[in-house]
Image 1 (cartoon, one colour):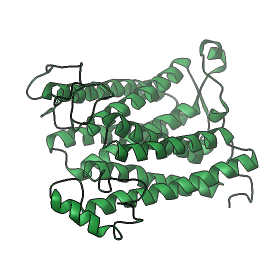
Image 2 (cartoon, rainbow, N blue to C red):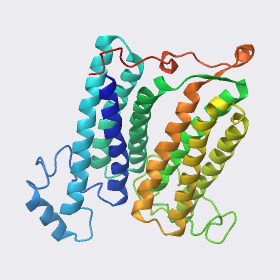
Image 3 (cartoon, rainbow, N blue to C red):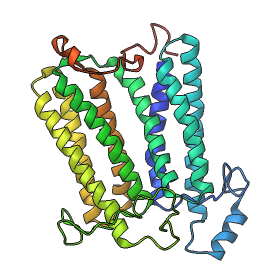
Length: 343
């Protein structure tokens, strides 16, 4: 089972950033139906329909290149789904790791539904953002199953456990904000850094910026989403990055005295520095596609490193009564497979 988990993790590491690449290269509607492409198994079989759609709208979302990118992502995601189903079956049969495997299977089912709705609802922002979060959830569960059993627990002061939990929560919120920025194409609404369009605090408009039921590019009343709303979306993502940075740096400061955590904290600090650098570079360099995809992958790495750190921490014996922390089986360190069972 351990080999299956690692194989699924390696595939997920490809699938999640590749999904971002499909979205950021405007190929999300390269095949405007689901699960096939114009009712066919591949763009090669649907080439005539694709070329006709491209001829009608040369600058539209359909082309052979975009169709292949979209379908390749579906093929890879389907392969990952088959692996996850096999992992869940093995976990249930062997009566080990049932909770994370069950969560993984549930996330997979939800992710498949969101993938279909992403296409059939024509890239509705709330669906696209939810699809991103679902992919991240699948990846994070696989990271935990593959790596957490090999990380020794460390006793720390209770406030460090709480701080790590706050960091993971803030990162999840920041991922949602980042998905909302991307799905609304608001990444370049703020020019310059740290100022936004030459202002230290731009004018914000919240009434339309976070309305979940609206269509892509439109306000709830059917009018075009105004620029102030896009600036609001982008600016709140920057504020979220500031909150994450403060929490993370505080955790590094408090945790550095624990020698057993220094290597992990160093990895966390490096992941944070790279992610911040990528975010700033995307703004200053006008969102080049490789950097935009790397920013998505960096978010997954930063969340995984933080989640693994949280799984290692527990309050010292004298402070446990002051920490209300659920003792879920998911956070227990169990081996994935016994001797001779890693097939």
